Image 1 (spheres, rainbow, N blue to C red):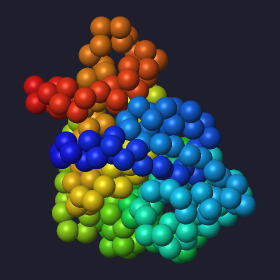
Image 2 (image 1 turned 60 degrees about the vertical axis):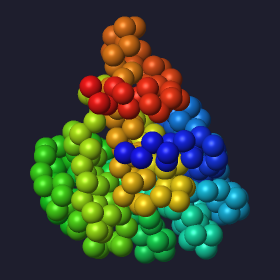
Image 3 (image 1 turned 90 degrees about the horizontal axis):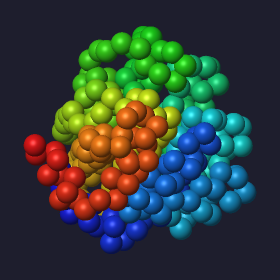
Length: 259
């Protein structure tokens, strides 16, 4: 993990344009603000591309996808490509319905994505590997390394396969992060917020593998640290302390990770 990536984010306060899951917009915005970024969420097709044009990164999350969102995602993705800023795609529940599958294929046909992030079931579906899913959740474990590599080779984007151990593949390097806490699985939007933190990390001038690993490792260590708070008794109390922890001094969080 490169500590200075997080320092750079807090110095620059990058603007991250989200077209995202409306169930978790408040949690995502507050989490990114705590971390050091600036959220904006403009999903109307009439303005989405203009908003992307002034942003530092774009996050596309299909959690509560509608036709207007789909249009805005493609318009914003093209604007991001024109500007040369990172695009992160979170194909939430892509295997759940044909509508979601076709929408993601359309986005990937029109937008050059920098990173695709999803659980193993979602990512397997993108590369036509059979996998059991339950709604937006993945069921079971498998070879995440191969899935990540296949996603990158098929779409030309770096891949993050989330799970008990997160897998990163950039096209050149394969990395793993085992940091995190089980409470994250019980908080709606924890994965969506991870995408936002990842987008912020991609705005620095560091190597892609360093940006991606820093985002996932810091997020996981922050969760571990928050779960140790004496007032945390379950996922509800954890959620608030986790948002607090995302704002803490980097060395404080990393000291927890070294124990």
